[in-house]
Amino acid sequence: MATTPNNTAAAKPATKEGFVYLPLIAGWLVPGAGHFLLGKWGRGALIAASILGMFVMGIAMQGKIYSGAHDILDILGLAGDLGNGLLYFASRVFGFGADQVQVTTADYGTRFIVVAGLLNVIAAVDAHNLRTGRKA
Amino acid sequence: MTHFTAVLLFALFASVVFGITQRDTPQKMVRYGIYCFVLFAGSAIALSWVMFLIAR
Image (cartoon, rainbow over all chains, first blue to last red; front, side, top):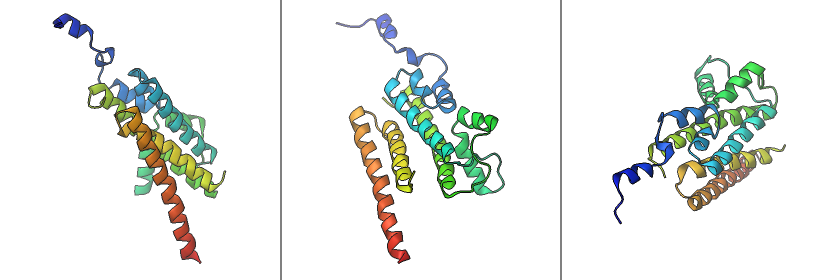
């Protein structure tokens, strides 16, 4: 039986409406939020748990939060940290993380925080691709 | 927390995100996630042995 144009339009998923960059921005600001907006609850929960876990472990290991860029490595570290979205800004406001790396594990912690930010950017782009239909 | 525990947790978190973002279906996501985890952890163990042998 043929489907009428009205039925086809009604069958469109609700995620195709609204601001196209919302999952990307939400996913950047809050880990997993982009997937939550698209109804991908399982994927969003796993992403949120992974990124939050990695970020919290980095803080717990007294990792450094980059606050300025003095050389090229600082710029790269700051770019990675900024990928954490609101977690980064909250850390700056509440003073989480260390200013200087003083113990061995703090160096690992710094990398954990940077990589958590980079993974969050990947996840936010994935949410954008889901939103635009580039990915199923 | 030991260094090896940190490596395993790093590999776990990164593999979960890689699996979800780089594949389309749940089955492929799990397989790719396990593949990434084995590569992360395996390469860390292999490089550790290389450094141990160089340092002798």
